[in-house]
Image (tube, rainbow, N blue to C red; front, side, top):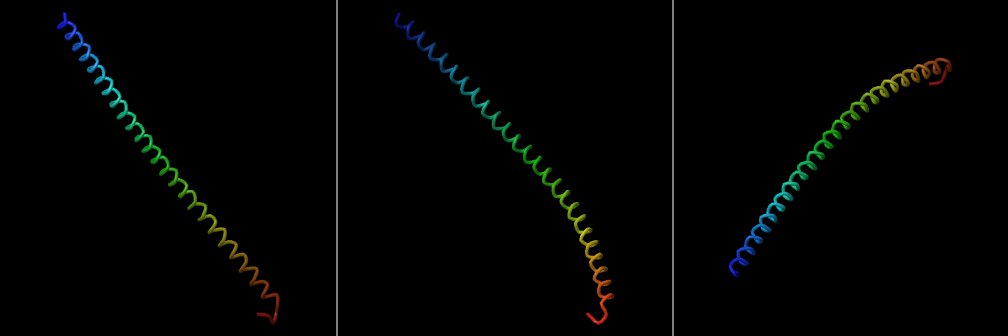
Length: 93
């Protein structure tokens, strides 16, 4: 009778240990999957931010080029007006 109780206790202990090992393994796999998924999310976010920054830089360059052209036109207009104003005022330089 004592041998049967010992054998049953040993069997329950082995089953519980095996169940614990399976539970630990599942948690480890789930944790690894979550870490990979988080890393991939961060990687995609970084790629999207890089693409957005490149688009913003390209847009800014275009705007700055336009502003440069506008400034050249303003400078030309001012130079023309100043030249005309000097011609109208004889004796002043």
